[in-house]
Length: 299
Image 1: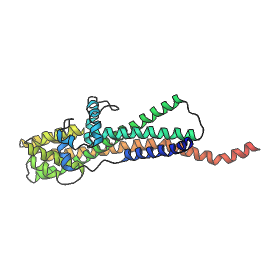
Image 2: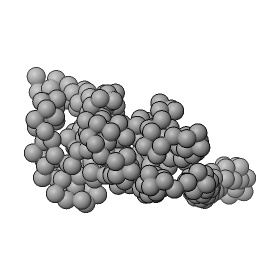
Image 3: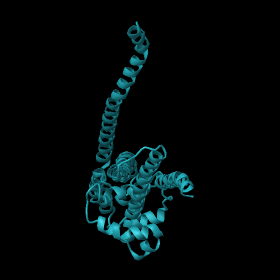
Image 4: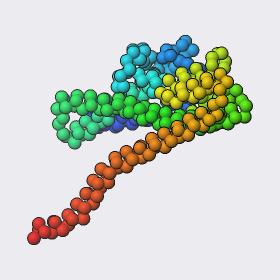
């Protein structure tokens, strides 16, 4: 009986590891636009209706999220701006970190069980250290993924603003006022940056706020200063100034800045690719000259 339990333990551990990995890779449910609009003006706290929509796991993580929100550290705090840019809630972010942490621990235990099955003794201190390392590595994956996703989404938002500026300039040239020009231009596309711009402007219209103030707050939450620049231009247009040339010039300069950033990113990727290519060529060279050397040493 004890022997059968030992044989079943690796299967149970592997199943647990696979379940944790699937839970970690599971993508969040599609975001409904109405719920996203309701969260646009959030200030880091949850209302009663928000708490009612939380799942059981997110309810358990809510006290942890409240405590972690007091810190802005990248590794153990809540990056509110990054989460807002990716349209993620703090509880869902913590749930992903918990799932990845469990996956790292489960993978470490699976490797330990395989070593035990192979009759390889592992010191308890080394096992504890490996478990801690697996947990730390698993917990760091969502942090790095959030940083990369945020960088990508902010770049996409800047691209959308460059196109939106041109559309706003065309609306102004046709005689539209500043506020309606911003709103009509935001309706031109259904991508997520245009949806966020449109939602912010519609919310400002319903609350009686000015569109440029809404754009300034949206740019601050997204971490994109170009939205604040558009707000300043729109505020100038509201005073009766002709801003068609200013809008087109701003759009042109923003497109040039985006192209320069894309070129710099491509150059950095090319430089990072040089090391793997070099190692591959060295390995190929060793593979080619190994037979000659082996025959020479055999002689």
